[in-house]
Image (cartoon, rainbow, N blue to C red; front, top):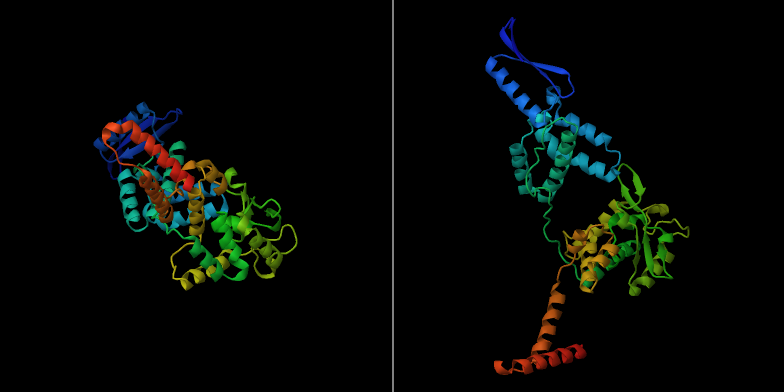
Length: 380
């Protein structure tokens, strides 16, 4: 209902409506046309079932996002740190002062396109967080629909990382300080993440059965954060390649204290190694070998690819890498140049044994080809 009243500044037009909860809301306008348009929009929203209480229209994204993050007590400390950084650096500078209802799909699209041009991976992370926050606002009935509608914007398209060879990993291992060489070895050959490496303790190494048990990760976010892996799949037992068991045994006897909970990667006075110390040593080693720009995580990527090339199935890769999703494991199944060369040589083996014959002798040609395949297989 629209009613006219006199005010000091002139006539005002008040719109009164009842929401789904039966409570009456009112809003005042300077002209009847504005009031009629507002009333029409509100009644349409009520009919469609997506009406939003106008009193929430002034809640800014910054206030809501800050509260949203504070209420997410289920998040790990490192995730909270990441989300806070994405909000401060990329989302709030653009949208923070805006009321939730004023964030439009076109504004989100423009923001995402600009960020993607300079920081594609960061743009995908920021967009996923933004979409998640706005989805919660929809659930809280603060906005009618999620303005984050850019198709594919949340998908990370990381550039292909360099593929380290076995020889390069060996050289990097030798270039590291003696007490940190095991970090490179286990990251590449057992495909461990940095946090998993820092969380390893003496009791996790089973030299008798040749395995490493991953039960915890260590990260430094406002101090040491020691806890279980992010997913259940991350808790696993990884077999150590036999040629490295003596290397692991030597490290344990030389650099690790005798207590069961002594960290395998230790800092001063036997304390748990800090990520910054490992990063400094790694950076120095890569620069020394002319491999600047190679990340420590590239060791895991290389080792996972070696594992795939050796014949591991996707399920075996998932188990070894601690992946809950097959999509993640499939990213590591690349064909390396060495493997492609081996495949090419195998094809040549088949061709060398084949006999050329007229097409009319097709049945005999097929038998001859089968024979050549058997000879090629036996020669390998």
